[in-house]
Image 1 (tube, one colour):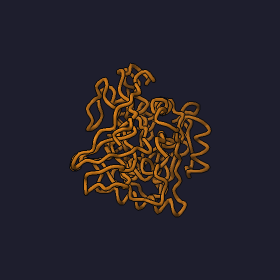
Image 2 (cartoon, helix red, strand yellow; image 1 turned 135 degrees about the vertical axis):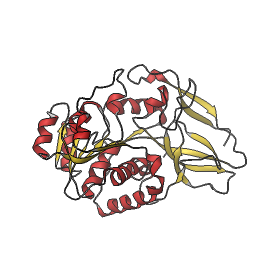
Image 3 (cartoon, one colour; image 1 turned 90 degrees about the vertical axis):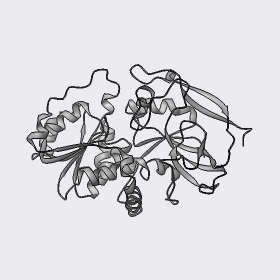
Image 4 (cartoon, one colour; image 1 turned 30 degrees about the vertical axis):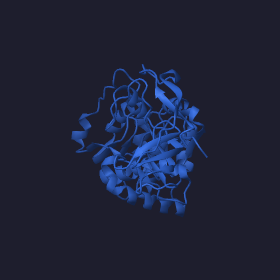
Length: 338
């Protein structure tokens, strides 16, 4: 195994504005030797997520910012191909922090946030999407923070992204009437015709407040926010009493040097609303439940998922750039090895 080479994407520059291909460099390094207590994972699929730009600049969550020359961070799913660990045998499929590389060396006892793939009947890629952190995010945030009730109105921004496209369906399955927000008519049609939204808003062409007043005249009970900025501001201006807001992401602000200035903050107090940030790893005890419930929904035909898969590790920077450009439909993934 050590005679093979390992393709890796490393940080080449700190982004200034939008992500560029020149922010990364592709290198080949020898595959490391596996010592006692270690195991080697061959990457099959890599996840692409909006938070990744922050890894290059100021870090995110539990991650420190990357230095020039560091391997780009990211979650992936792969198979253990060599092991000197009894806890992690050869042949086990795992999902975890593999990084943008073809092979990753992991150490027993130093593998937080690494999990065996439990659902063996679903496509392996789903361990990064609907049956992985993407799905866990939608399910756990809605169940714990939003606590939706039958008949309530839920609004989801970034509704055709990886998390958003699952969140609209989970909210519906939990009893809500759902309004999705996306950036093209094609995405809006998918939301209403395939994912069960009662209405969809094209934020580029529709007047958000007018549409919200029409479809939620008594206000929004649940807002699952993946975007922040102006869409968040419109939602704050159209809250129902005791609304719950999940602050899951703010992709609209990641490229802005000057944050959007919200005008409707006061409505949180006026409507007795609750707004809470979400960090998926806080909900590890709920992961098994989330996976079991959503796998059952998929089997019943009640939950659908979209994957936007590019082929080849060489596509990683392009995949991240198209994510920020809103070109993906569903969970953005790159296939590294078949």
